[in-house]
Image (cartoon, rainbow, N blue to C red):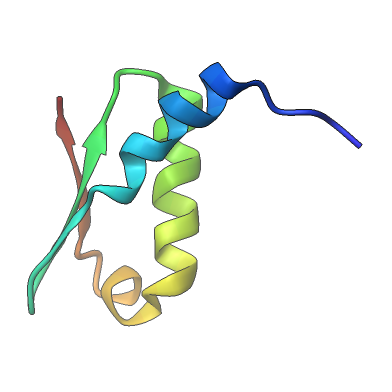
Length: 61
């Protein structure tokens, strides 16, 4: 089992602050490509109707 540090948790929790409208989901981009992409993947899994229409986007923070 891999332990996650408190710093990693604090850094990754910012991704839950996404904006969902009826047409689009905007996810914060923290300029960490690996983490940014993982956030998009996870949100896409939970909102497949947005993902299927390519309606999930990142916004630089």
